[in-house]
Image (cartoon, rainbow, N blue to C red):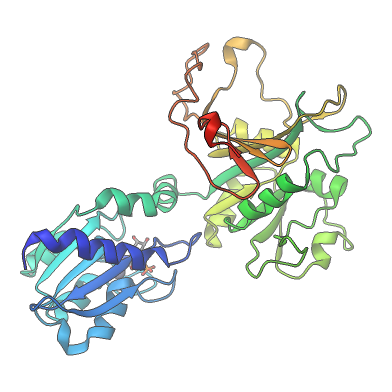
Length: 373
Ligand code: AOF
Ligand code: ZN
């Protein structure tokens, strides 16, 4: 079989991969086995850490028909024994004659599969639709590279940057649509994190609720961080599901504990002290700011001190997206990595390249006005 069909088979493998779970400690991977006469003899995808890899599922489906087949895999087959055995050996043993893969494995423990297959006499081609595969697993690759979970900080403020009034009351700064939008995004993470200060002040439930108020079927792990105890009657204890109390004020230590539990994508909801600790430690990867057209004048800021005394030290973020959500605005911005934030750098062109979304109740502000709802 010539190379011309490789992208089409890889596209099918990518489709299979996309049905895998995220967040998960493992990447999403798909595999299609095509026999010498061009028929699919087996397909598979990875269902998450601890379950068989995509190649193994496809080989099991193919049985003896895998002999002489070509395997199209979205990730370089692993050559290591992790929670499961090496896919390279299974492919070799099954008599697969050629392996075409998309993305090289960025995990140093599992890498080297291409070389191992080549040594065993299997023809190997890498890089087919690599960009698509990398995009599918971009967050996973970043966690592997960083060796810690990704952190998304969510804040809700008035136009003048207040997250609570002078008396501490904060419900509700943003409207119903924005709060529903928060639930939608929360659901895409595997842990929701707050400090004990926020817990004691707001008594949040931290669950993902559906528009009818019912609990969503999949709930992120709810995590409280800080030294003060979690009151026995705290509302988050009353809701079903797991609650974890990390008795530390150290963001890095907290992320290490969460990483060991398999958490890869954290949704940080404050308060200001905890947010400042994560920002100061350079441990925030995404920021979602919900801004309400309202003023408080006095009151609690969204974030506590960042150790910035002068405008030259201002922390600038890269603007990714601005969306109207109901009567509020959602801003997605990405903190710059250390060394990427020259003092006083101009950011006037930062809206360029912003992406568009199609969320219910949202309007893309970066799209031409005619396209806005
Ligand atoms: C593959 N095919 O379907 C996946 C791979 O602990 P384990 O055994 O599940 O190994 C996890 C690592 O293996 C993961 O970090 C990544 O490098 C690779 N995942 N490899 O050949 C698959 N999911
Ligand atoms: Zn594997």
